[in-house]
Length: 62
Image (cartoon, rainbow, N blue to C red; front, side):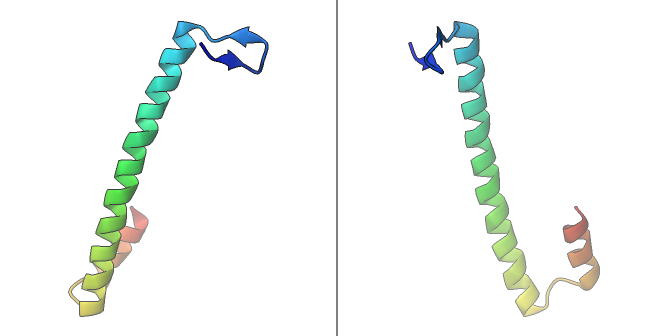
């Protein structure tokens, strides 16, 4: 068991909540990575001039 702030032991409830939070964070990281990929692709498309201005504004607003 881990100690929390050196005073009391963590309950199993806290442990479960923390592991859930960790899993969420991992999923968030995945989401960030995929959105980075999409951003790079859209930048490439912007350079090629395939995206219209209205689409750019839609993306920025979302």
